[in-house]
Every structure is written in C-alpha cells, then in structure tokens.
Image (tube, rainbow, N blue to C red; front, side):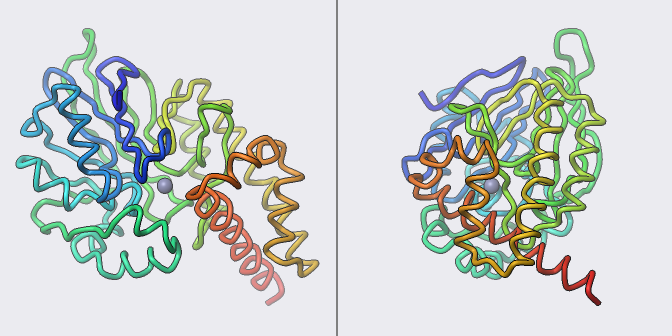
Length: 311
Ligand SMILES: [Zn+2]
C-alpha cells in the first residue's frame, strides 16, 4: 500500500525512491471543488506517484496545481515529467525557483555536485514550459466547501533551508506542508534532524520558524516524512535544535576541527542525533543528505558568520 488517508480531504503517497520507504512523500488535497498535489517528488518516482493517484482513484485530469515547496530534486525535480500526465495542471513555485525548472541544466549540475550518487537515484529533471508555471511568494487558493467551512490553502515564504522555500497552510485540518523548513522527520523515532545543506541561512530559518508558529498549526506535513502532530512543540524544538547545532559548530570551527570531528560532536551532543545515529549512518541516502550535507552546510554558515564578525 503506497497511499494513506491522513486527514479530511488529504492523502499521502509514499514515493519510495530507490526502494526507500517513508523517505519522500507527495500529498494530495481532494475536495469536491479542487484537486491539488503538494510536491512532485523526484523524476524517477513519477511512476510510483501515478500509481498512487490511481490507487486513490484520482483522475489526473482533475489536478490543476502541483505546488512545490522548493526546486530541489527530491521535492520538485519530477514536476516536468509529471506534467506530461496531468494535462490541466500548472506548477506553483517561488519566483526564484522558476527559471531553474524552465531550464533545469544548472540545477541538475549543482545537484550532481552536492548530492553525488543520490542525484542519480532521484533522476534528471525535465524542463517545464513557462506557460505551465505559476510563480508566487504569497497568496490563497480557495478549495471550496469542506465540512461546512470555506477551505483554503495559504501560500507563504519560509526561507532558510533554501532561499526560495514556500510553505502551504491548509485550513480544514489546520496543517502546514513545510518542505524541509522544519528538518527531516523520522516517524519511527518521532524525532527530527536538521536539513541544512549549503547554502544554509540560519537567521532566515529561525524567522521562518517564528512565522510558522504564528499560524498556530496543529499538524506538520513533512516531505521527509509524513504527518506529525503537536506542531507548535516541534517548531519550537527545531528552533532549539538549530541553535544547539550553531553553538556546537561555531565552537568547533573556532577550534579548527575537521568535518569528521564536528560530525562526531553533533552525534554526541545532540540527543536526537544520538538516538538516530545508527539509523542515519546506515541509511545510504540520509547518510549523505541528512548527515554529511547538513553538517557541511552548518560549517560553511559558521565560517561565513565568523569571517563576517572578524571584518
Ligand atoms: Zn528534501
């Protein structure tokens, strides 16, 4: 079973790229009036996504929006391929991301250099015609009547993980699709690790978390992976975790420690990382994306911050 109903008018499809379950999800909002997909996932998972839509008995012709939180391969990389199967859909993306999905060559090259072998598991993005893109940094989509209320999807910016991160709040379950703005969630552990690849922006991330808290959500929908309740506690917890990493990494960079030493420190000093240690180090993709790239992004941020404070 690849699909699951996770709330009123809301479904999760497990895309299982490379056979990894509970790793990347797409969400489907289906009301009487509207069908919207959140995250296309990567190119190589499009067959799994189409299979999931079929399992949910969703007619692809009814989907009019594929909203992507950001253009990284695991979130929006498959949108170009997906559109070939969704004749009436447009891709909703941040304006800073739009040029890179119209012509994805640069995105693909930079993904190959940052992700290495993982980019081949995700697959190369196909270009998207400009007339099938809607770019915005804020707005509202009316979803019609859900249980007697006027349901809506609110779009807003949450930069930090990427400079062009969007989040989407749905009013009928009071949940937010956050992309990677609140880290990577591991449902089996009910804990989170930071998702901070370079270029990472700590101040922007913290401000985005405050913005998310101000929506007073009950639920968070992580692309990696799944629905989590107790949203406010998790948002505050992620802020605290980022500040903890900042302290660990800043101190270590001052002492000229290597990336390997800093990684060991993070695993020892952050209790969430200690708990996840074996799982993360053994997961072929997370070892690269959640551990190596996230710690590297934080180190680069710390170096930049320290050279700025010296000048
Ligand atoms: Zn991601």
